[in-house]
Length: 243
Image: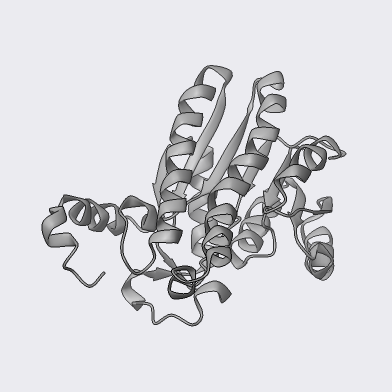
């Protein structure tokens, strides 16, 4: 059975995705920082779904380590799912360059760096898939989260170009825009219930979209129309709005 590499495997969405693929018999490589914290979770996956699970240390911010990380994988994955993300603090980032760079490098530079190290192998075997979790925040810059939004916008553009590049290699690239998700990362936010979904809901949608070779997935369909309207608002008006 094929192996799937999940980057940023400690997140709630990543764990739900791991379960979704394990249910269907995929073997897993879970990668992230302090990966030892996933020992109990990996053991549960092995016992419940009879799949193999490897734990690998991975730091998205340490781009110099990414080539070695990929080269040292005992089993090269058929699929790569990048769940790396950091919402950060917009207000702090406006005053603290370190926070601003952490948001940008986690959500864009680190993701691009590690995916690019995986691409040559997929091109060599001429098959596989890449899933990148971006955000609706990347569809238009807003004053409330423009560091995060700009990084996700860049990641969305990267995935779009990569999808075109790898089309002839039978490698599918899926861009995911979840919208509001009830996770530890968003626990401090007052999210609208009508627009908020669970990590499990996101995982199911991602698996189906990946299997159908969908290009761009707005996890909750209404977000596609919401963001379409937001993008159509003239800049003169938009900059006055409290968004």
